[in-house]
Each structure stands twice: as structure tokens, then as C-alpha cells.
Image (tube, rainbow, N blue to C red; front, side, top):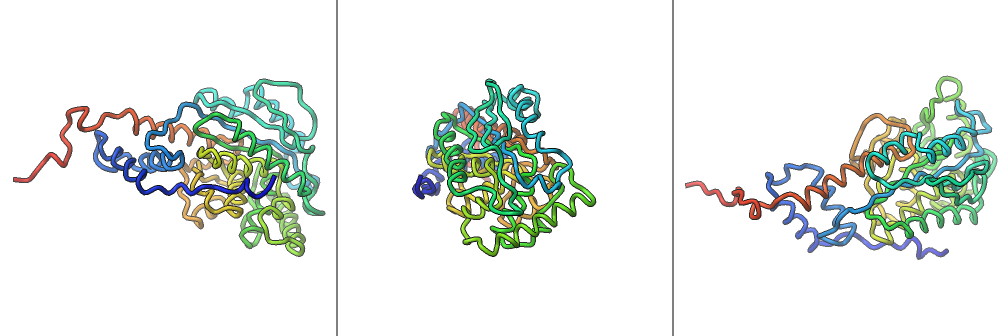
Length: 352
């Protein structure tokens, strides 16, 4: 793999934008009255490069991986829970599985770095790079070769997916620590502001988590080369690398990606730091209740689609947001126009 993987075409297209806006304004409604649904429809058409772009198939991937930093005892759940939850997802018992089934969204959980093995299951795809990362408090979480391999997994899955709208989510005990460290390194901010409760750390355990991430960030800053890829290798996770790869793979196909919460947004941040143009391909699904997520989104001028105080991960926010984007496109394509419905437009009315 070479850096051509990160080459992304801009979505800006003035002529297409004018056509899409004309379509939206011709629908039987007051101009702009569908609010942000009109924004989503316009953005979707621009990303797809087609004023008649449609959504016929949606797919969501949950990338799962274990984290060596959990040996620092910074989460109330043992790392075994990653393996157990992947089984639960693949068997249809997790929140994301239930929601995708009801929403008609194709669903796959990807073992990209989970400890332990799995028997074949219909909704499980095993693309394991390694059985978890190393403890980033003591050294790099991944070597460059394995990090690239995880990026390639996500990239290739996006390329192979014949869908019109992709969603990403994650599962991995300890991955909010990785995400917090990534935000801190890439944004050059104090890790105490990026570390939150995650799966429920509180009291002394939360203080321990802050201490571990703080020490790790200071340790890696001494030898970090300043690049987002090196930051990913040092404190990231296989599932975070996989999601970053999926963003680029989708962008190559001009397919939008709906980003879930705090950890998935860290993967998006890595991608944006590599190639800022990729941001235009992303819909940020919701503002997580994890401590740093809302401040980060606000600092980048990003308005998430939803804000439900969720912090489960898995891709649950993506599922909800994907349905809203679908409804936006249903209105865009299936509403009658003033002309076809024989309804008087405001332009037909004149003051005497």
C-alpha cells in the first residue's frame, strides 16, 4: 500500500449544487422548511457526484479489537468482554444488531484484533491482524506493518461493499483510552480534558485512567514524528485503524460514511489529519456523552445529526442517523413538485 490510498477527490461541484437546490426548492413545501434534511440531501448528492443519487442499500460495520493498555486496570470490565460482545453482536443480541435488523441495514461485526478465536457466524467477519494491541503505556501499540494491515482491511471492506451509505462503529474494551490519547497527541491538548468515563470508570479508577493516558502521551511525544499515522501506531487500536481505512475506501467510491461516537470520531480525526478533504465525505451521527466528544465537534464546527446522550458505541448512533439521511433522500426523490401536484408556488402569487 502507498499513499495513493489517501488520495480523495473534492466533493464541491457548483453546477450539481445548483441543480440539487433547485430540486429541493421545487418540492411541495415552503423553501427550506425541511431544515437540516435538505442539508443532508444536498450533501449526499454532492458526495455521490450525482443530482439523482439514491440510497438503495445501507451497511454498517462494527470493528472490534482488544487493547493491551487494559492491563493497567483502567476499566471496570475485563478485556474478555470484547470477545463476548462480538459473539453477542454476531448472534443478534446487541443493541446495534437489533437496531440494524429493524432498520433494514446490512450488518457485519469485524474481528480485526480480538483476543481469542471464533467459530463461523453469519454476521461475523474475521480479518484479524493480531490478537490485540500492546500496552501503549510501555511502547507503541502497533508496529507500522500491522497498523497498515488494519487500515487495508477497512479500505478493502469499503471497496467491496456495494452499498450507497456506510456506517462505522467499534467494540473494544480499553478503546476510549486509545481514543483519548489520540485526540491529545493529534490536537496537542492536555489528556485530562480528553479522558472520560468510557465504559463506566469513576472515582479512583477514572483517576488511574487519566494518569495512564497522561503518562503515555508524554512518553510518546518524545519520539513521535508528528504524523497522524505514527500517532495511530503509538496509541491507537486495530479497530480505530480499520475505521480510518474504511473512510478512505468509501471516499474512493464516493460513498458517504456515517461516523458513530467518541472512538469512531477519533478514527475520523486520524483520516482528516491525513487528508483534510475526506471530512466532506463524513456525516457525524451524534454527540456522545463522553466528556470530550461534544467539545471536539464544536471546535471543528461540526453539527452532529443527533444528541441523545448515548455512549454505547458499536455503531448505534450511526444506525439512527443513517435512517434520517434515508428519509431526507426519500423526500428529495418522492415528494411531488409544485408543478406535478398542481399546487401554487409562492412565485405564482402576486400582490395587487
